[in-house]
Amino acid sequence: MSDRAYIATRKGLFEVFRTHEAWRLEQQHFLGDPVSMILPDRRDGTLYAALHLGHFGAKLHRRDAGSHEWVEVAAPAFPEKPADSADPVAWKVRMIWSLATGGPDQPGVLWAGTLPGGLFRSDDRGDSWRLVEGLWNVPERAQWMGGGYDVPGIHSICVDPRDSNAVLVGVSCGGAWLTEDGGASWSLRARGMVASYMPPELAEAEAVQDPHRIVRCAGEPDKLWCQHHNGIWRSVDNGALWTEVKPAAPVSNFGFATAVHPRDGETAWFAPAEADSRRIPPHGSLAVTRTNDGGRHFTAWRGGLPHEHCYDLVYRHGLAVSDDGQILLMGSTTGGAWVSEDGGGQWQTISTHLPPIYSVAFA
Image (cartoon, rainbow, N blue to C red; front, side, top):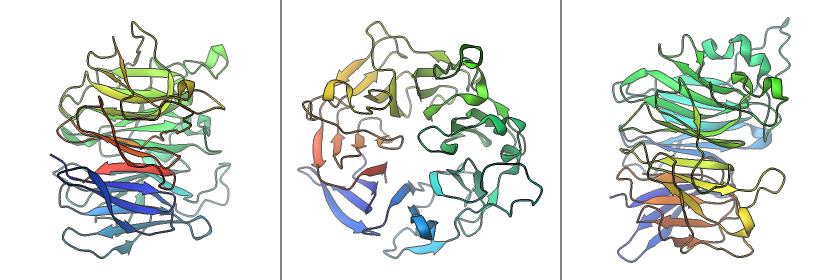
């Protein structure tokens, strides 16, 4: 059972430790600095923290297993933009929005998704990075556009546990993309999604979809879940076709965070919100919705969560599930952090006064 987790916030990184009585805040790192993403590498125990330092740019730090020291390593960076390029996007990393490890057969391999929408790969634990030009150069990138940000970005990176060269990524707003050769070539993987914010004739265009978050079930890798800008979609064929989830009792079709059970691809969790400009919990009541049957039915769990005059929003990476599928960790933009040890039924408050939370992860 997991007994340690990490909470990345606008003003530092916080460690959470499970005692016999409760989960408690234990240590702080990078206090005062925005930490946009945290990645524990289960292959060797390394911890990676991405910092979003504004004027000073995106930074990346690494802490080796057993060490208390953080070492700054290279951050992803675009090559120089060609002088004759017509690309309106500035080739400069504004933020590291996602981090993922390569497969167990790829020691040292890391993936990073950025704002703007670049995918980068490191083969040496972050000491160096290269832009994945196969994705950056797809003609459809000209259709990508910003969602919550004014530029498109890559927020979801799903490595296939059966084949480390097969990686699916989610782009807001640019759909889902799959490589099966380690990044050399890419194909769109958003068929079936519908963007209600587009004109009707463009609503099903794959390259303009806004998947807020995509997650893959490790035990059933063909099963993927997506919290989209205007709905929940799932795929049972590795993204070849997405089907909108329309449960018997309606649930909010807007939100950012989703998590999937590590072994059961029919079980997934969401943190619903109200669209678009409000971006608060429905009816001011924070909840986590869970399905155990592939989306046919959902249960809304509120036990231990604030359910009156609540305005907490859960970002894309603000909901995580442990490797045993029993413990959930959630953090909000209002600095609330909660943990559930029964699959989301009842929640324990860790803190209600942290800085805005960007990312949570179990060790």
